[in-house]
Image (cartoon, rainbow, N blue to C red):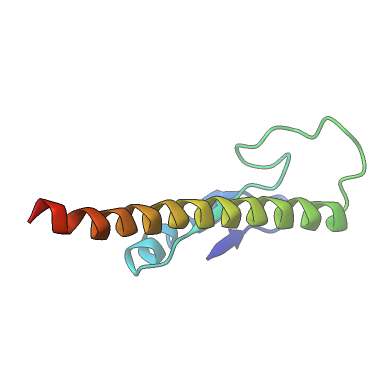
Length: 89
């Protein structure tokens, strides 16, 4: 679940629900928009809503790719364990 705050706010708006959502089993990501909350100020101009949406999309695709890579490693480890198990018994 991705939580994105509104204009002139920060991830602090999610502080009351973030942990509850995580405890309910959701993988929760709360983003601070560039220049708000704990994020740095933009060093370039042109940060309109479309560019901001593109950056969020890019970030989420990177997170998804990293998660797929981690899952592939977990699957590989499980496969190796199944192959090695008969030798251990």
